[in-house]
Image (cartoon, rainbow, N blue to C red; front, side):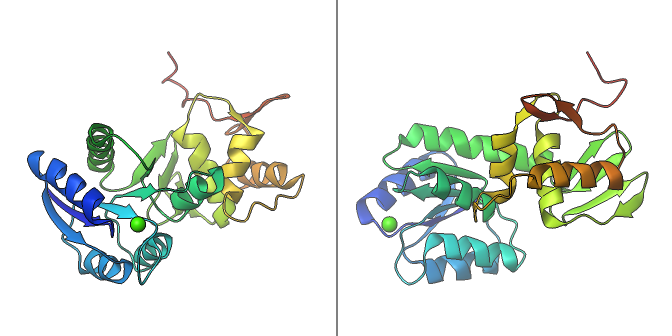
Length: 224
Ligand code: CA
C-alpha cells in the first residue's frame, strides 16, 4: 500500500511516517505543496495524507488542482484549523476525510483503513438506487439506462440523499452539502433543487418530511 504524506512539520511528519511504516504502508514523504501536487499527479499512490498549511502551495489548493486534473487517489486532510467552514471546504474540494491537529495516530490509522475499505467497495464509483444509477466520479446520472442532465448542485443534493438513504436529512445538512463553500443560500433554493430533481427523475424519489427535511427511501423491495 503506497501512501503519500505531504507535511512540512518535521517532527509531526516523522511521527506519522514511522507509525504508517510500522503498519504496512510504504510512505513517500514530501514537505511542500508543490511537490505534493506533482507527486499526486504522477500517480501510483493508493492513499494520501495532506496537511493544509504548507509552503509553496496551500493544501486546499493542492487538493483542488489534483482533483481538477483527474487524480482520484483518496485523500485524508490534516489541519490545525478547526472551523465548520474549513471542514466543509476540505470535503467539497475532494477530501475523503478530515482530521484536526493534534490527533491520535491510532485514530489516523483507523480512518485510513475506513477510507481504503470505502474506496475498494466503490472502485467504479457507481451508486445504484432502483432504476437510478449515479456515477460519483463522472457526476452523471442515468435513469433506466438513459442519461439525465443535472446541475452541479442538484447532483450534490441527490448524492447526499442517496449516501444517507432511509435517513431524514435536515434542511441545514442538505444546504451545507450543496452550499458549503460559498455559504450564500437563497431561502427557497433547496426547494427549487428538490423540485428539479423530482421533475427530472421521478416525483416519488424524494419524500418531504414536514418541518424536518427530506429523505430518499430505500428502493421498493429492499425495505426491511
Ligand atoms: Ca503545516
